[in-house]
Length: 165
Image (tube, rainbow, N blue to C red):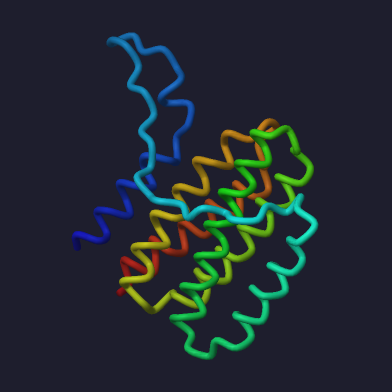
């Protein structure tokens, strides 16, 4: 029950972006809350010449991981690293590369969600991660509409799975 409340509160905090920015007739608007979720350091960025070696290493790790939960955790780690790398690239003015990296991050996150639909512990972590990814994707100029739609669908899947478990 507590997990369902957590998921609903995370989703409600991130689903209505206009609510915080619209003026209210009843007083000052409430600032948007930041999602408390730690993103790992991205390490080597995609604009580095040795990044391809890192990408191959990541794929080898995924191919050699057979436990579905460990594989989902690894995919979540890669998704979090890539979304943080995308944010760093966007801040550095490399928007095309940032968009590509963010799209890859969402694909890893989607794979982690699909692999974790029956693991309650993993679903709570994924709910926070999805909310953090959405927070970062909204800061991109222009916002990544397709990635945001995918993110919203994943959030709904995780919320539904948490309610069923």
